[in-house]
Length: 287
Length: 265
Image (cartoon, rainbow over all chains, first blue to last red):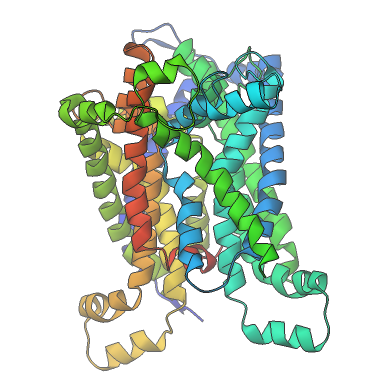
């Protein structure tokens, strides 16, 4: 049991100051904008909750939010099972382990706009590797700057490429913490591969999977740079995810009030869904 | 066993394809890139790399990025160490709420903060300095560092602390000479993740800099749009951004998986 010691606050103080400086001041600025109207020159008028009502009723927001949920649901549905399968089939010891880990982690270490630019180059119809293969070798008509379906598939494949490794690394970390004795016992009992997975490996991975799903949810819900560089939100508005739309409003049109109100709604949704995931996934722990 | 290893091999191939294409393109001439499709560079050229290493706007981009990423990593890990110790050893008023609040800072969309951050750092006179970006990245890196370090510290038995205090160690001396060496793997992993997330983030880094502290990734965006479509140069610059991360990950490869597994949620 941890000791009760209020001195803990003293230890936490530097962290508190630094994070609060970066979190609270900008957050209050956003709150401030969200209830005011401005015509520039630092002149502000009280606007009340009008922006919030306007955003919550706007079809544009609903559409962007819908696309955002669709995107996040799709990448979670692909990355989580895929990550688990890859982690299960990775070697447990030997020379290949560090090689696998390092090569798999590589996509996560590339700056996000480089990821977007890289996939852009990769998918160019006539001179990109993927674009060329699709159009000329396989004969599939593929041009993501014109076809919304192709753009969606490309954005999702890019995210799978970029982040599945995070799920793999986390699950793998959970798997290597299982003692050999568990597997030997299962062998003696004549357990099938499925039972080994269901009753030994899955429970051990549960904690890390919770972290993986939470991290992937938060990061994919806030994704901006990669799809923006890859498609610019197009063709049309087909891949304009929530963040891209937000930046369009805030910096493109300089509508600070609506953009701030939208940010706060956005943040509240992220917070609520994260809390929901967390509660659902840890519900059985208490029992 | 053999049959199973086909899955990781296929996955790694899938991961390597776009990277291969980027690297291959960086060695091609512009005519070759735009002229048509070729799997390997037909005429190898180092022209793109030569441009980057001789043009100050390019190589200063790398120096700037490395500078603010290093400052951020040092700050994040240093302040996270005592905090993580407090979370793992003491109970104090509001500790759970504080821990959760720290984690929520990862959830705020960076796009939300771009403009207020610009105003905040302009107001305190740090705009376009390494410190602005380094401090701004603390927003998401400190919570992560605290989380990882707390996990590692939780694995160290409390008896270690108690014995040291009985032996007459003062707290700072205990922390520096006994405790820190015990969790050095955790410090390595935390530093790696701070480095990684600061290195790959662009939106805030771009917003908070103009000339003197501009990160390499921002230099790339500007060149891509202003100088037409110089794909070879873009590919070479992209290739070079992969290298620092690859070096850092090689040092922590044996601990990397452990870092997350030990954390609590």
